[in-house]
Image (cartoon, rainbow, N blue to C red; front, side, top):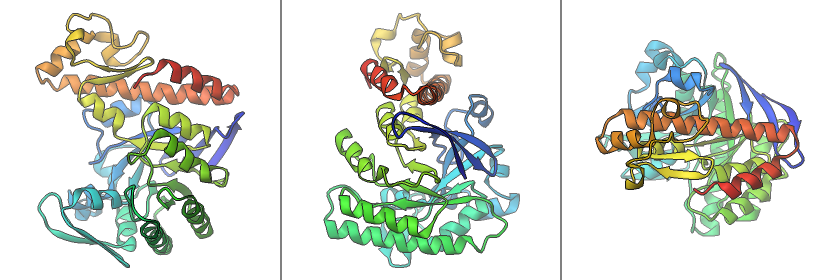
Length: 368
């Protein structure tokens, strides 16, 4: 599924994912389209920017528009007209974070819809069935999400249940012979080193198509993030894609790439954009501040996005103050271009065996 073309002077590596809807270069950042759309962007423009893999959310699509819509039209790609690859998460995180009531049981999780309060039940098998209906290119299994601060035994119990569910998920996938999507396993274990190592070994024994690392970027310090990732990074298989779930800030991406991670996703670049914040090589700019009222510079010199090539900081600030929808459209595109360029520069630095030099230089200039 992944072909590695270059391993740098550290664990950082450049490769290609072979997926049902085309090849994806790695390391890759995946924008998040929760409702199967990246807010304030058209699929055509996202494709023009170079993105070939975006994330969508099983929980939200299950509740609305529902399975019948995808069965009728033949999957998520036809429903959305997105011609490239989708990764769909399991919905497990949303079940625990959005629903008013959820209860974990050995065979799945019962929850209430955040939309209308209706009651539902996710099992490992039903989540795989739904993602097969979506025709996802990469599917994630149902797992038990745990917050920081829980006890060792709570983390262990959640980890063991996650592994039992992965086994059921892989068995269920075999039933869908016409579905070409890949199914990853998720490493859990909270912030306990022995549990993280045990989790990785149990996941590898089940031989999923890729390895995802869950339970990070949940409020821990950057040092704890790197330490936890470091516990298992050297033991990750070289012939499978490696995915850290839920990271999208440059500092964490650079740490993950150094540890050999291939894939990342996060709402961060697009969410801050909708609040008027833009990413630049020197850090984050909040264009809603009064200091940009008379600033006739582009957001970033040399950037080729629509905002930078046609408009000024002053005008974009005006759009946000006037609550015009063009404001979020322009800043979202800019941040997606920034992230695409960052991943391009990372890949080039790895190929030239100067990743650590690039990482240091970037970190010294970027404040955000």
